[in-house]
Image (cartoon, rainbow, N blue to C red; front, side, top):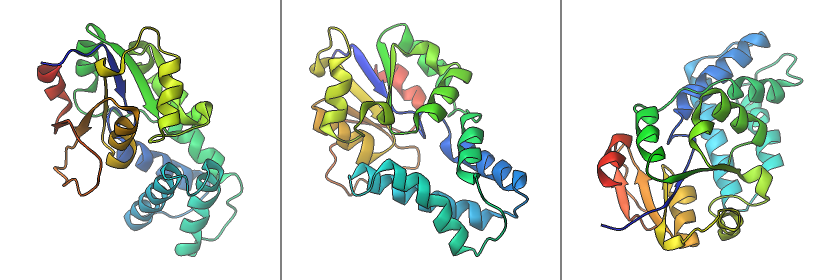
Length: 227
């Protein structure tokens, strides 16, 4: 069995249940602005947001475009009227308060923490992610947290991982592994960085991409058997 020392963990949809967190944040934001929301609007926002972040991962747009466009597209698509000034800022604040975890996340982190050096690697927004990681207690398990907004690069860019490894003491890439749910961000990023990849795939999706998966799991608890 291969020996690892450094574990890089994605945050959203790997440790945090992002769908649940996002749903709560957008619901409260709509309520605060006196706007009506339903499941169709919530689901459409998720699709819009995911699509924009994927464009960001590919370097097609910048982070500012993601932030400025996601609710503008949503409001136009559903003809949502009313005073929406500051909606994005309120949403980010509310999202920072949401830290619903994937099943068994704490138990698995406890196990890994006693054996490996743990790091968060995330493409999220700095203030939002820092607050969630701190208030959830996840921060205490990590040696360091790398957020794309702070690095100037994003997953899956090789430069992002170069930035991370330059700031990790005594690291060897052949002893590092990344664990995440996204083929285009986490797994492709791991490929670009030259490290082992572990795809967290709870929905049993098919890998139709060129991203190379070394290990695949459907539940986080499987890590306690593999690592």
